[in-house]
Length: 209
Ligand code: GLN
Image (cartoon, rainbow, N blue to C red; front, side, top):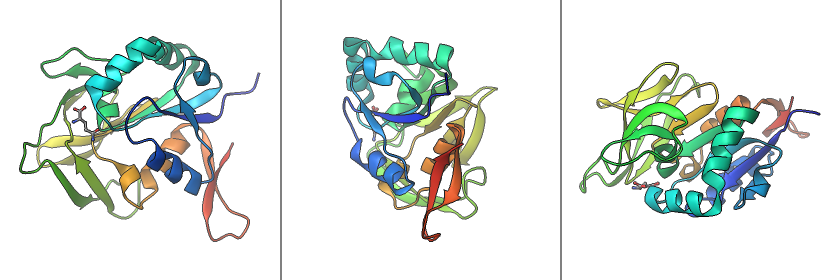
């Protein structure tokens, strides 16, 4: 059997459409995942921003939580959590029980306080893009610890904003809410897609390879 190549977006709650549009801009038609059955044949799954307590409950109710953990451990599913999604991936959520525990990171929810609740900034993330990229934070968590084999991709102001393992990526900000496609491209590469040029050679897209 050939390797699964599909990319899914968990579509129980939160920011699904923007992720779908970013993937489409890179030539990938993503599947919305609401049931255990729709995980079949996926190589990668995005867990979007939203509200982690609500998402955690829905993961339990639908049975998708244990199914995602199984696909991660047994089938090599690659996962990317943005904001609330990153909280779902952490093996420690400060003051609360963890959800999926797929990454050796600790996160603190709503860690910026009301003044800085939501903000934009720009930062260089050399492992992901050659030039600095825009970052959008919305009631974001902070990653407070990333243990090996997790690698820190971005650290700003004393906390970790992005980290990854070979099979998982966590960003506390929302790459789907800026025009920049770098993180989506990075995730697709982790899922085994390789970049080529589109037919008119003006627009890069990602092919399975
Ligand atoms: N504050 C939310 C939580 O703790 C996350 C916010 C977001 O995903 N934009 O779940």
